[in-house]
Length: 290
Image 1 (cartoon, helix red, strand yellow):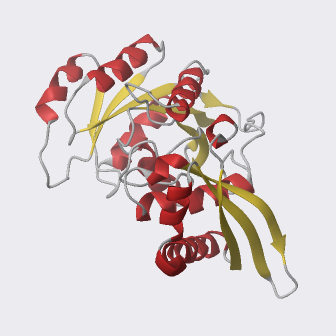
Image 2: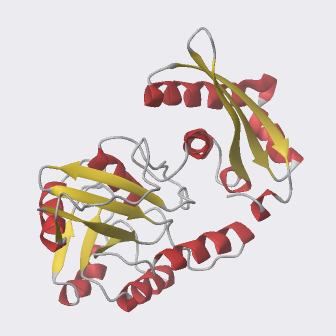
């Protein structure tokens, strides 16, 4: 018999859910950045050890007031995920941010989920201002409360111990994993995963506005005879002025984005990579893609 189950992570945008999953899994399965709404997909990632298996479901952060089409779609997808059958819910909050309307909205959704729940207060070792007292009242509502630093793995081990306590025991001979969990132990196919790695670099390297007007589509992945992986990808953005900003003076910015993305992809797949990266303007990409 082993412990095995599905754990849903819920919280508003940029509380550190993806960082937590990446560090627990031990490899990057979800992109991260300091900007909100970096995650646009639901990520299902498998953690495995001697005690059993945990399927973490990392949801996109919920935005309080979704004004644009993309934000509304992400919120809708997240709300659909909240209705999935899970064994445990982790409600993650950010100790460095004030409680507000957005947090109240997420808490209201969490309260409606009829499953065991753990409150996780993240970023406790951040040197900036702490709003921890504003979340103190939640300790009366949640039986289990953990204060962690996802980025530094502070107090993450005791949290994992508690998660395993909640998971059901299953016969190892009859255990089944969801069919959509594939290498690298996540549910995204390789092209989407590669596109996400490229998009992360746009979030990290561009200003506040541009990342939310862009997405990345990987059109081709091919192994060449010289053992180099050739990747052809497009950055879609909504306006010519954003395209110019992404290209940069003398093409400097797109070269930087491509260089950083190529290095990370090469590290992820452990192969030499040639990244053919182009930028296209499509004012309606949000209606077709994330």
